Image (cartoon, rainbow, N blue to C red; front, side, top):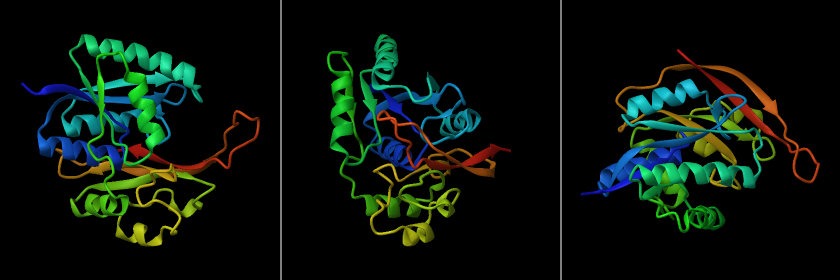
Amino acid sequence: MKTGALFNWSGGKDSTLALYQVLKDNTYKVEGLLTTLNKKFNRISMHGVRSALLDQQAKSLGFPLQKVLLPEMADMETYSSIMSKVTTEMKKKGITVFLFGDLFLEDIREYREKQLQDTGITADFPIWHYPTQQAAVDFIKLGFKAVLTSVDASKLDRSFAGREFDASLLSDLPNYIDPCGENGEFHTFVYDGPIFNFPIKFKKGETIHKKYNLEDDTISSGFYFTDLIPE
């Protein structure tokens, strides 16, 4: 019997590529998707995607969806407390592995593993150290479709928000930007591809610029968010 696993799902391309790899390898029984959302706006954390589109994603992928609502700008203590409760609940349901789509950030991996210590749940990273240029190219060649929903204003200009994640975009990215946006340069929403049963339909809405207050009382450069409206 395959090990029961829960996929920590962002709705973006790295998560999608990792889920594709897990399903291809057939190493786990994926019991469902787990996604954190901004409670105030009911959107996927960091990505800014509406909860309704997340629902459509999960339906198309054919997996149950567990939503975790977080306060806006939740500190690490609050986040850890909420996720601890979720982890306990998942363990009771027989989940013994949490799957993540991280690529190479060691501190993020260490944090995730530390959070799961002594819980009876282990972390696995199916696409860990997948070269990001190759990952980006492979994602496109496999037939996945994605759009940039969130762009770090300190690293990319407004014109990148709302663009398709395709070969043209990769060629336009500055050399200092990771092709998969692994350093937080941008986030995506995947709406079609080989593991989807149907494409997610939406239209592009307004692009806004939102700044955030930082812990040191300074104001960040913020992000450009392109709204995706379900059709």
